[in-house]
Amino acid sequence: MSSPQAVQWAEIRADLARMAGDFQLATGLWIGVCRSRLAFQGAAAPEVHAAAAGALYCWTQLRDRASAVESGPGLVALLRALPVLDPRHLRLAQARLDALCASGLPRVVPT
Image 1: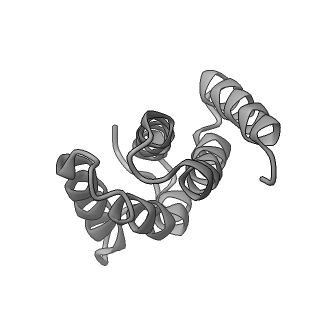
Image 2: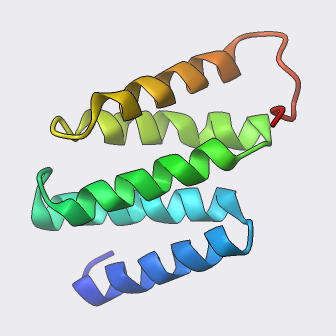
């Protein structure tokens, strides 16, 4: 996303996807928004943290194991790039990703 307006539109799309229950799309959009805001604003900006929180929330709502495993590493890497973020967010994401990657788990994550 190359402009502040594009980032704002992506945030709107991410929220709409979340409200529609399309957590896979919402997760990807929030990760993209967070990366863009991080590049424009830096790690301490509240908007960066809000985007990271949106990405984490949507990712934790994914019930399809393959989708969660696919987007999990990008989310974890992004959370690691935010040193002032609440460390519990990174621990939660890493623990869930580790559990999802463990062998023998069902394709659909139980609620």
